[in-house]
Image (tube, rainbow over all chains, first blue to last red):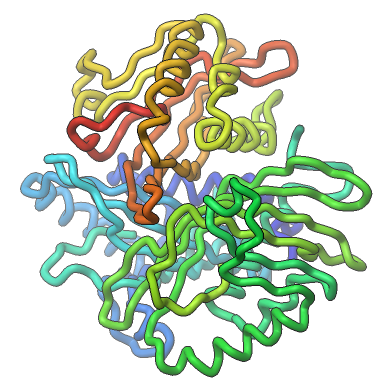
Length: 159
Length: 159
Length: 159
């Protein structure tokens, strides 16, 4: 199917994803604004996703838990002189049904440390359910499936 | 020239490339569906491409050879606990002539191993000829030009 | 805001960025064509950008200085058997005011050496001011903010 359904254009969809990435990288306080109140946000490994295992590396049920996560990160990030850059690509719509748009995208996250080194932090896929709330698109569901493992002991920042 | 020609929109073009990447990463059985019966598919190094040398790392003349490649990979991938993620970007049309669209794009391929490590496998450019078959876009030609070498001894997965 | 303003479509904007990347990677002689005569081009570190420090790793005030840079690179690149691949993503418009479009984008640059190794050279953000000159879009301002440090002693190629 083409990515432009009857109500959501590719332009609007890309704007949603790129604004979302910008929030993660540079305006974390606004990250929760991209979710509906009854959202489901999960980070899972590819292995667990493929096997439908319930284990999640991060799980937020509802926007309140997303906001809690933002607060937690603010408290610890003082000690963590590093930053992330989210590159989102390959945005595709899969299904458009009952006012919900099912979309997928690839992400690559680059991590930089203050001393100047940088590396690929992780890559993977988003499996998303997008709804329109008033005039704005929001994530009703966002499942982040990681291709690589997280470095053991690393704090989990949102993807 | 602008990427939207009279018959192919950017939306349609991006959908083609992103569905193609999705096939490579997660639905390899459908990879051959993206090619015409008389297709030419090649992977070459940048050096050979720049010098117009005929050496190819992978060569499929016709969709039958593409299908053979899929079978070959299925047989060996049982032993290869690794996966790929194709990020396609910078999609550009170069020429639109005689029902053929000449397009270019950049790709970056990330490789992940089951134990969780991941790295940049390769990057490079696609030089493609796209035609419309009935209502569907297909690759009549796809030349994958690698910026980096393949790791010696690595099996060649499609790009 | 949506990325399509009244005069510049997403298609046109993406074409500008992807043609720009193509010039950097494969047709450096045409790189200066993407700038207005009175352009400002700068490469700065994230730290300096965040602190509004004036230090720049590369600074071109006016298209003449951009052309000088092209000449300088041509002279040295004979000795530098390496190439770059610019992946541009997450293109967003931020403001459209007084005939100027303020846009941002993420970039990742991959570096390849003739012996075949490759790695992430750097990643970061563009902060751009785009104007229409006759029928063509040009960069009036392009600030490249690097997430990572440059490898000490490395020659500075444009981003």
